[in-house]
Length: 246
Image 1: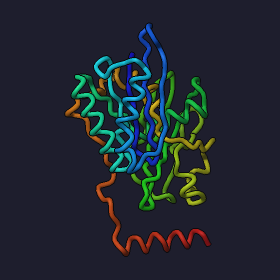
Image 2: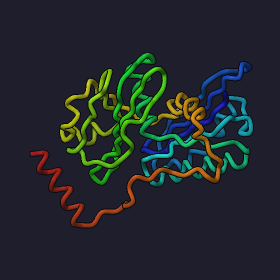
Image 3: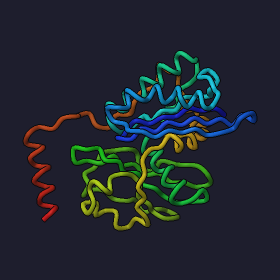
């Protein structure tokens, strides 16, 4: 299988290419600053890794992109690039849930390939909120237990796992710290971001489940429908943060 994957849903940009076609198997990856700079470096990074891999875009089985939730600008950038490359090359697009990629990254590096258990992924959504979803891993496959949604830091709670450990993963710990009181039951807190290499590991399961779409059908996943706060809302958030710090 030959795949290209990239994620720009956070402040970090991750790109990876893999091939396992019996001729020149390998993995090529690149990490750099995301956010507003993703629109500048994403295409050049993709082309550089494709050159290193010896593949052309038309040889790919799919182009995977982090569809969100995450930064609005980052999601639009990744989706637009995935659509453009896939349309020109005539290959399908595989949208990958960025929170599932966080869970896979935590499992791979923090729990091990033989792990069985539950991972709740938490990404900072800014505006004093967190993107949260819960997944269960067993027999090499992921199952979604709790769909992606927005939650206040104090309202974060881990579902009780039916088996294995309840693990929290993401980048919300450094941002909200002691306000995440609902994580007391977590067996571990694993710092993790949605990495392109995690998306590559997820791709076989998602492709087998028929999640690939045509270029024109690829869309970002927006959880929040509001991107700006009122003056009163900003003041209330600052007051809550000051009160929590006392």
